[in-house]
Length: 94
Image (cartoon, helix red, strand yellow):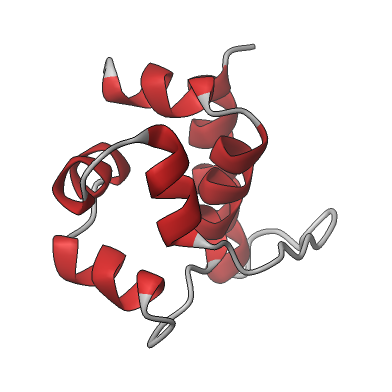
C-alpha cells in the first residue's frame, strides 16, 4: 500500500469516526511540529509549503508564529515530513 493510499484510508476513517460509524482503533498524539524549522530544512518558501500541503500561506504563517498549531492530518503529515523529508518531495510531485 502506498503512502497516498494510507492517507486516503486515514481520511475515510476520520470521516467515519466523526459521523459515529466507527470508533477509533487507536489514538495518536504528535508533538507540535516546528513548522518553520521543517520548512527551512526543506529549503522551501511559505508559499511552496502551503501549495504542497493544500493550505493557505496564512495558515503556514500562523503555525510558524505559534498562533495556531497543526492538528489532525496536518500534524501527522508534518511529523512524517519531519522524520522523512523525501515525503515532501513525493507530495510536491502530485
